[in-house]
View (cartoon, rainbow, N blue to C red):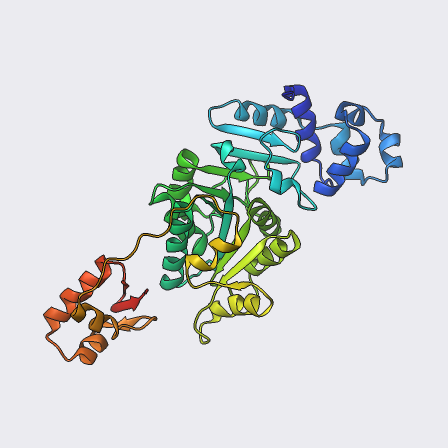
Length: 359
């Protein structure tokens, strides 16, 4: 049965009350299934519940104008407010210890019922890390998974683009309200996801960025997903917080290793030492998750003998074109032309000043 606007207003009022987090919200709802009776309590009765003064003041006099604006927002096309009792509230997220009582959503909320895998990592990612996240997002999307991430710069952005650019689906979980695009550089990604995917947040629409809200956001990213893939993370990073939350929630954690000299690989190496699955290819992830469909990565086109020989001279880390030419001891134009062919066939990736081997 659909919730009336009056009931939704009471949920929003409690959700906005200072001092009322997800756990306290759940406790109040357990004792007052009809929130109207809770908001009808006197100030003395609320004091007997040992609530803080600012909490009591907000309960006695909710800001109904803001609440009415949010309800009006939810009545616009593709905008939704989903309560914990809503039929479209994601089942996996309900299982965590502190599920958000309310989710604000823009886009296709039916995606919340589809299998998701989260891809997270460093904001100041390397080009190689971003390319790795992009490729895994594309491949996992083609295997039926929704790509979930946090719309941050770096790995998050690359993961969303890996899905969007290849006609796959993605969900962005914000650490702000849906009225604030943060960071601003990701406005175009935000708009594309709103049209072709889903954007959600537990924070009120007008909520701007606050540092303490991003760790809270991370538990939602992991809570929505069947597994989480970490691509580049420092030892002290939000990505490791997300991975820890995923483990607490019983989710699978995967990590991509990197160079021992790369500070952004140390977080992934720590996760692997602690039991995360080391990931090199898609085949390291799919067997650990419930199958969605049988589509696999398409086979790479075969190489001619001279192309295979050239490939051996390209390292699995950025290799300058001059070094490749020196190793081949061949005409510069011939080597350059063959490098372009290897890139088009998907065996190497162009980097500033050179190439990097992928297979």
